[in-house]
Image (cartoon, rainbow, N blue to C red; front, side, top):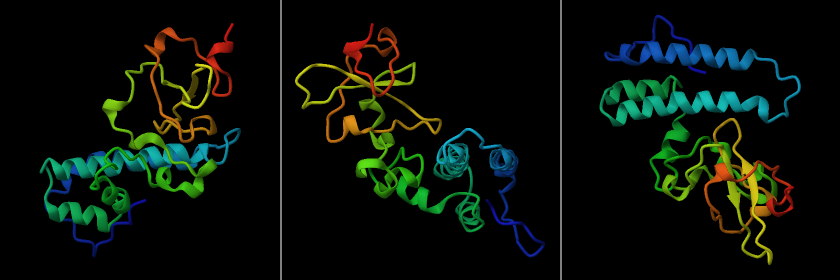
Amino acid sequence: MPRIRTARTRVPDGFDVLEETLEELNQRMRDAETESHDGKRKNEALWPIFRITHERSRYIFDMWQDRKISREVYDFCLREKHADAALIAKWKKQGYERLCCLQCIQTRDHNFGTTCICRVPKESLPEDRTGWHVVAPADVAEDRPRRRRHDERGCYRRGAHSLNHSDKTLGPSSQVPVVSCNRAAGSMG
């Protein structure tokens, strides 16, 4: 959350360009924080917060890159925590341009020491309208693709079945029936 603005905090010229959008995102953040998390897993309750943090940081970063705001306004936003400075620092590095949150690259937070595949270049991802990804493990003798679903943050999560395997698309995903991540596509009825 951004710091509380006091009378001593001088707002730079040009901040009014961002102010309306940031206020809307702050209101959405407050709603996400107060939303009931009954029936959700521990990490699912945080997904809306990660998404809004990403949107707010990406908005400020894109405005600065497109030169719609000055460096002074950009630095003010980072200093007052309107944007996640660590996430933006990762976006500036090659291979991390599409990173959705810092949790995705922390292997200690994932099963089997894996990371999220939000770092996969967009052109390498299949044309997918349904939200399902086909995964074909390379070391499996039978050609039985498995599926995984992206979570509410927009990330595709790697599971144990795709650890250290190459991902291959097997055709338009809209033609393949929906299966759970633990069932093989070959066993569909």
